[in-house]
Image (cartoon, rainbow, N blue to C red; front, side, top):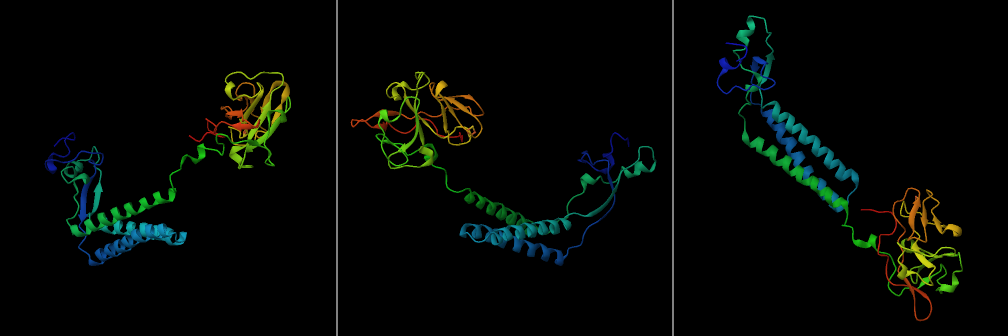
Length: 303
Ligand code: FES
């Protein structure tokens, strides 16, 4: 028998995997044990009960200690069942690795490699119960999906601006174009939704520069009056300052600046998106009104 063919003396089909150089020199098949089987069954019963208690408690909104405890005890019981089941499923073996040079190693290579050790034939019912309870437990963990809450609607993509909504001050007073003087700025909201944060708008009267693309010129009133979302597109702070001489809007949180004459595109700072422009016009009574909601997402991008 050559060293290149260690399995020839141990029977056909011998495995030659990473453990094939370990050979069994003694093994002890565990005797059937009612105590061990009882332990497995008991642990499976506990795990099965917990696999039901855990999701039910979660759905009923019971305290964390109930469903968390159910999950913990169930996992522990399942682990005990698996451990006890497999302790009785394989023989205790004593294996050694032959030395290259020792003559006794030739005899050793004629014995059974550890990869050929087979499990002990035992009650298949216990094995099926183990698989069943493990599957039940796996299914019960799907109940975590309910914790994700309802599917988000498109609510985040909308604000309170509607076609015809007048631009009003914090006191609810509607504004005419002439109410914002040259180089002036005002924070406004849609009529009926004053102080609703995501609808805050900066109304800006440019002085020494005329709006140009990417500003939507159809939404510019009097050729110099533009309206942009006040919510910074970086992290949502209110854009609060307007520097008239170069038409720059400034966010104080992280110093992003936006060019109010060019569609409020960012010119400095961490943000990468322009402030959305509000579609704006003047109604028949001479008040500033929105033509509709913003056409772009207000505030920080969320995907
Ligand atoms: S929130 Fe405006 S720059 Fe960060």
